[in-house]
Picture 1 (cartoon, rainbow, N blue to C red):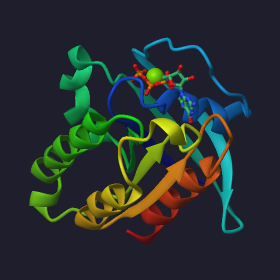
Picture 2: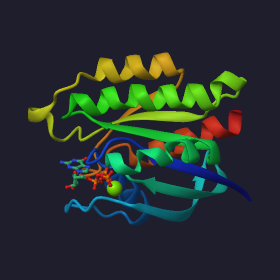
Picture 3: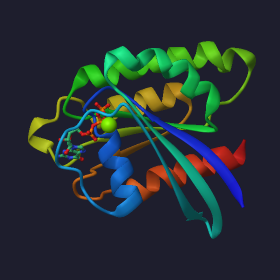
Picture 4: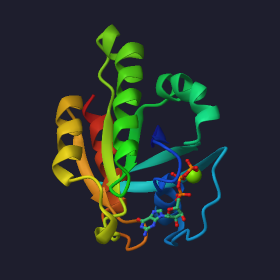
Length: 169
Ligand code: GTP
Ligand code: MG
């Protein structure tokens, strides 16, 4: 069975761990406990074909950002998350994208990835319009998916999308 390494990246508090834990065990993580680094493994069927996903849940807080290069180099695919309630978290992804370009795209390597706008359930607090997430994804040539870890909206779709991207390339 094919095994894919996927890293989930983005600023602190955007919901990376909540997305991963929702995917892994179907539960919502209500409490905020900043991640240092966690890894998970799950067998997952995409389009009728099984694969094993090794998911690396990374730290969003600044002091760990130096590891970004390592995660980008070492993964088959990336899930880049921002929060629809915090504009600066979308802007941070433009920087991550620059790192990706510098590390991989310059060598002509395509990087399978998905851009995720999380916390759709907090509509009252939205600070970013979906179209802006779409634009970032269009610039990066990848898919844009809006999720709610709280309501379990589109969570499996995120991982299916990144697996499809990896399989194509
Ligand atoms: P770091 O580990 O510091 O990088 O943060 P993170 O991106 O892993 O964020 P985390 O998943 O810990 O979530 C931060 C806070 O946002 C927690 O209190 C979560 O319960 C909350 N949260 C995450 N996803 C959602 C969501 O879809 N909706 C709502 N309402 N809250 C969410
Ligand atoms: Mg976390």
